Image 1: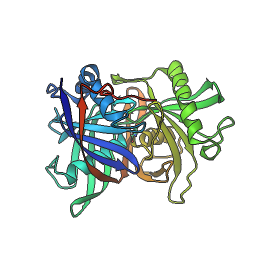
Image 2: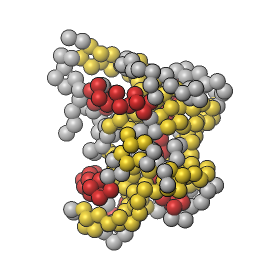
Image 3: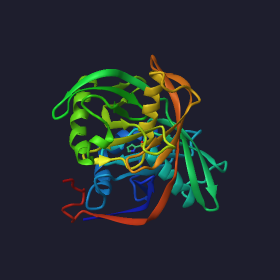
Image 4: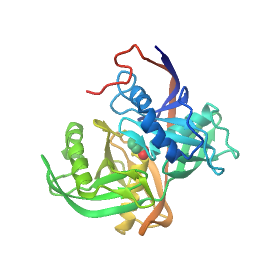
Amino acid sequence: MARHTFFCIDAHTCGNPVRVVAGGSPLLPAVSMAEKRQIFVRDYDWIRRALMFEPRGHDVMSGTILYPSSRDDCDVGVLFIEVSGCLPMCGHGTIGTVTAAIEEGLVVPKEEGRLAIEAPAGRVAIEYLKNGQYVEEVRLFNVPSYLHAQDVTLNVPGLGSIVVDLSYGGNFYVIIEPQANWLGLDGMSADEIKRLSPLVRAAAERALAPVHPEDERIRGVSHVMWCDKPKSPKADARNAVFYGDHAIDRSPCGTGSSARMAQLVARRRLAAGDNFVHESIIGTMFNCRVEGETSVGSKPAILPSVAGWARVIGHNTIYVDDRDPLAHGFQL
Ligand code: PYC
């Protein structure tokens, strides 16, 4: 019988939870974060389930585990754990993790205000602004993002025929803009979004089964972005991003915002150098930018950046006791 102890710093980024595991995680071989992710999913997924699902977590829970990086040009490696699985990259998770790691002294950057993380999806440079001991803003320079497929018609039970795009920003996103069978966020309740999104995701996966052209370990449609006009006059667009089985992101979603900018650039509705303010379902905002253009495989791609704030909300020592019949969590 064993009681596993995890020392966590709980935070939220613009409303979405980030549980940073600072101690108690298993030692993994000194390989890249992409390889560590494969090993963790194979051997230690119970840790993700225990820390993300009820009774220690909840339907929207998301977090990270810090590891040494295998790269000379990165300060720390980050594994993204979530109710939806072990993600290649997570934007709100990065903003919360950098905030917690700098404020709590878990990472000491070589240069104040700058560092780089090794995510499973690739290197992500970071700039952050501090006020005294607190981090006020984190900007992440995300992995190259690209439009994978456009104008794909899906037939979704309960919704009918919809036309979507599929875009990559560190995860693959189905992007749904207002149209005949979906009139926008004010016309659909959060419960309806949660009921329909898994059906949309499954239909997109059946139709497209995306695989990243440069890393076949990154595959599958994981998130669904319902897009709309902004509510705030300061924003350019608003979204509700669905993940896992029951979650709507409370933040504007960093990898989703990157995917959305890639889609808008490919459709010539945004260009290199443009800013893009994305609003979440609860009204919080990310200040995003198209930093430049590049390619992924044979596809044109963008270099996106995403800036937002996070707050540390507490220290949390979590036990996972082998005697507990719910040790590895549950979902309704
Ligand atoms: O911010 O990239 C993000 C994210 C992914 C899933 C939830 N949030």
